[in-house]
Length: 222
Image 1: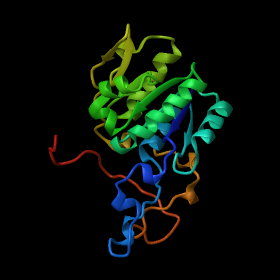
Image 2 (image 1 turned 30 degrees about the horizontal axis):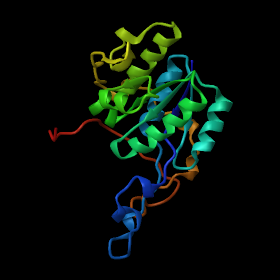
Image 3 (image 1 turned 135 degrees about the vertical axis):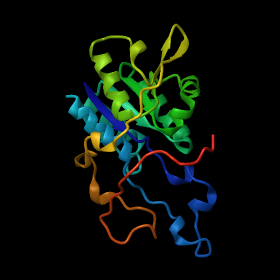
C-alpha cells in the first residue's frame, strides 16, 4: 500500500496560546515556536517500509492545505495517516474535511496522543476519519495496512477504532513496544532536513535533530 503520513497544515497563531504567539523581550525569546519533524511519523514510516509498504511524509508547518491536496493528487496514496495532539485537532479535523471532499475514496487514519486518550471522540467529531489508531503506531498502522491490503474489515486489528453500521467500534489495545531498539530507525530521508529549526534558545547550532531514548511518563496525571 501507499501511505502518506502527514501533519495537517497550520500556523502557530491558530494553535498556541497568545502568550506564545507574540513573545516579547520581557517574556523571553525562547517562546518563539520553531518546527521540528514528527519523530513518531518517521518511526512509523520506517516500520511501514519494513513491512513492504510505501511511505511518504507531508509537513504542515511548511505547506498549505492547497499544497496538501496537490500532494495527495500527485501521490495517489491508498491511505493518509495524520498525527494529532490536542492543540492540533481543530486544524487536523478541518484538513480531513477538505481532503475527504476532494478525495472521497482515500482512507484516512488518525493517531497520536490525542487519539490515544479520545479515539471515540475523534471519530464522532470528524466524519471524515475512517480509522483511529491508538497505542504504538509502528505496530498498529502496519497491521491495519496489512488488513486493508487483504480487503478485510479491521475487527481483529488491535489498537484500531472504526465505524460499523453507524457506530464506532473500538478494538482491544495493542501491546506496547517493550524495547525501542526493536524498532527500525526513524526514516529521516523523507524530510527536508535543513528547513527545521527548534524554538529559539533550544539548540546550539543548525542543522538540528531531536531524538528519543525512552517513552512514557513516570507521573500519573490521568
